[in-house]
Amino acid sequence: MGSIYKRGEVFWIKYYRNGKPYRESVKSDKETDAKRLLKHREGEISQGKIPGVYFDKIRFDDLAKDFLSDYRINERKSIIRAERSVNHLKRSFERCTVHRHHNTQDQSSHRNADCRRAEMPRSTGNWLP
Image (cartoon, rainbow, N blue to C red):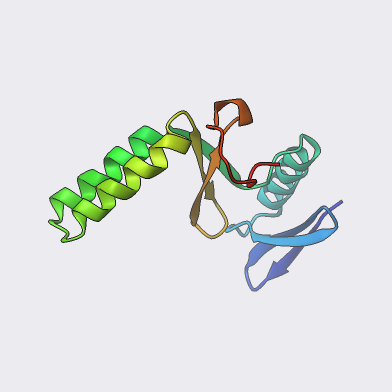
């Protein structure tokens, strides 16, 4: 259960996810907008989604290609090192999907790799569980 409150002329909502409180500006002076957003956030939580965060999928190969392209366009001196690093990482991540998620609350963006264990190459190390 969440709550609605006003700071100055703008409404804010407060809701809980896993026992932790989250506060978010509605960016509106209308209480109906606040009720609608709070209901939407609580619905996302009940579905197991992370409120206000939306995911895009991109392949590691595309990410690596863009990374190297940026190095070439900007004529970075370390392009050879970057190519070597990407080739090394490709052995482990070329079939992986990278999830890029956008946080609507602070406009930040983060990336997480999602690989299935079966797709990962065998290693002599014990870094896989």
